[in-house]
Amino acid sequence: MSLGLGIFLFVVGAILAFALDFQVSGVNLDMIGYILMGAGAIVIVVGIALIIRGRSTVAETRTSVDPASGQSVSRTSRNETDPLI
Image (cartoon, rainbow, N blue to C red):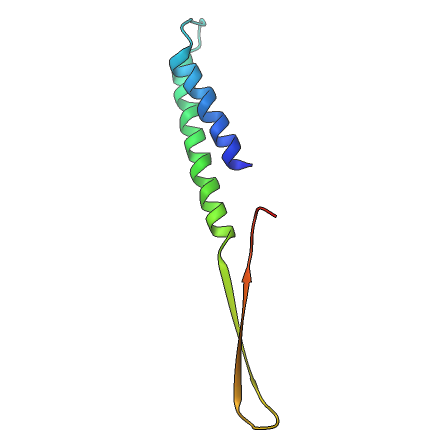
């Protein structure tokens, strides 16, 4: 969702900054466009960071003693998360 919002903000900002050719009294549309483009870029970067962070793999190691042999046994399990589900 954050990537879509970031792209939307960036596109609307680009339209305001570069495509519109009229003036509104008391409002600088170019500046509003640049602000929206900057906000969109920040939202895109944060969204990508959250997606990368959400797909990290967590490894958990448990150590126990086998009662029959008395030896230490290690088991590793991996938990892969997918934020798109």
